[in-house]
Picture 1 (cartoon, one colour):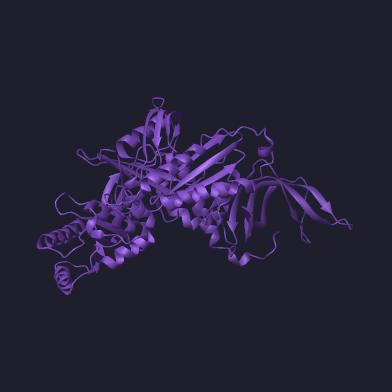
Picture 2 (cartoon, one colour):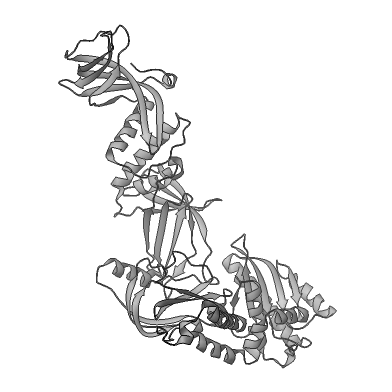
Length: 577
C-alpha cells in the first residue's frame, strides 16, 4: 500500500484514522470529541491498574509547519484537558500531541513550555508514528480512504446471505458425496475476507446440529450473537468489537415494542430500567423488533424476548468505587460492617435517574442503589444475600449479619473506606425479610464457636434442616458454658464393671456421653458432656457370657427433659460412661 499523503487528507479523514489507529493499538481506549471550536480528538486510555489514571493522545490533522493559529488550538486543547481531568478527579500519566508531522526544535521548545502549564508530562507523536500505524492497520486506511467500505459491504452481503441460504437435503450425486473438506476453504476464505477488511469488528461462524445453548457469560468484546436455523442445521454468527470505540463508530441500534403484564416482576424491572437505568435480569416480550447489527445480521419486524443490559459510558460515568456500609442501632451501636465494591454508575436515557450495584468482599451480599439525579433527590436500596453453602462461616458472617439486621429501627451508615469522611446515614428498608436471615446468622455464629474447639475446617453444608440447626445450637451452647436444657430420646450406653443395674426402676441418672456433631461431611468430636436425666429407666440389658451386664438402653420416664454440661477441652479423648 503506498504511503499516505497526509497533507492532502481532510481533517476528518486524518483525525478519524489516527484515532482509530490508537483505539486498535490500545483496545480499551475511547475517543472524546471536544466542544466545537478547538478541533482535534482526545483518545483516552484508562490505566489497567488504577481506575483514575489515564494516558491521553490529542490528535490533530496538521501535516505542515504549524501556524500560530494551530498552536493556539493546541494550547486550548491542553487547557481543556486540564479542566476536564480536574472536574473528574483524573490523573493524567502522559499526554501525547499526535499528528502526521515530525517536530522541529522550535516545536519541542513550545511543547516544553506547554508542559510547564500543567501537571502531567507531554510528548510528541509525529509522522513516523502515523506512518507506522498506517502500515500496521491497513484495513483502517482502506476503509476510510479507499474503497474498503464498498468491498466490505459486498462481503457483508455475502456473509448475511448465508443466514438465508435454503440448504435443503441434497438430491444430486454431486452434493450427496459432499465432504466437510469440500466446503472448508469457502467458509474459511469468507471469514478471513471479512476479518481482513472490517476495521471495527471481527466475525466467527459456528455450525451445529442442534440449538446451541445461550452462553452464561460473553467475552467482553462480544457485541452480537445471532443463531439461525438453516435446514437441519443451526448457524451461529458471533461479532466481536476490535476495540472499545467500535460501537461508537458503528453502533448497534434497535427499535421494538416491549410488552409486560401490569404489576408483574417484568413490569417492575422495566419500570426500574426506565426510571434508573437498572440492568435487566428478566427477559421481556418484544414485538415489532428491528435490530441493526454488524455484518447485516440484524432483523426487521421480528418478535422474541429481550434482556436489556445498559453499559456505562467511560467518559461520562464515575469509576467503580469502594464504600464501607454498616448497620447501626438507633444509638449508633454497630451490628454489621462490610466493604462493598460498586460498579460504575449507569443512567436512564434522559439521565434523570441512575443505578449501580456492588458486592461485598465475600461475594455473598449484593447491594443495589437506585436514585434520582434531579430534584427532589430520592434513593432506594435493595440488599440480597447469595448462596453461602460451602463457604467458611467467618468469611460470610458479616454479610449475613448485614442482611439480618437491615430493618427498622436500625439504620445504614455509608462512608469512604479510607480517609476522614463524613458518613451518610439512611433508614433501613422496610420490606426486608430479616427473620430467616437472623436464623442463618445464629447458625453461622454457632459454627464459629465450634470451629474454635476443633482443628477440622468447618464449611457451611450444602443442605440444612431444622434438626441440624438445633444440634449445632445445642453444642455451641455447651461450648460457651451456657446452661442448656433439652429433651432426649432412648439411647444405649456401655456399662462398666461394678455398675449397679436395676431394670425398670425410674429415677434420675447422671451420664457422661460423647459430645459430637456432624457438619456436612465432617464429624467433630468435642469431648464429653454430662447429662442429668431427670427421669429415666433401664431397658434392654445386654449381658456377656458370664451374665454380667455390658450395655443397657435408657428410656425416658415421666419426663424426657435433661440438663447438659460440657466437661471442657480436657475431656476430648476420654471415654464416656
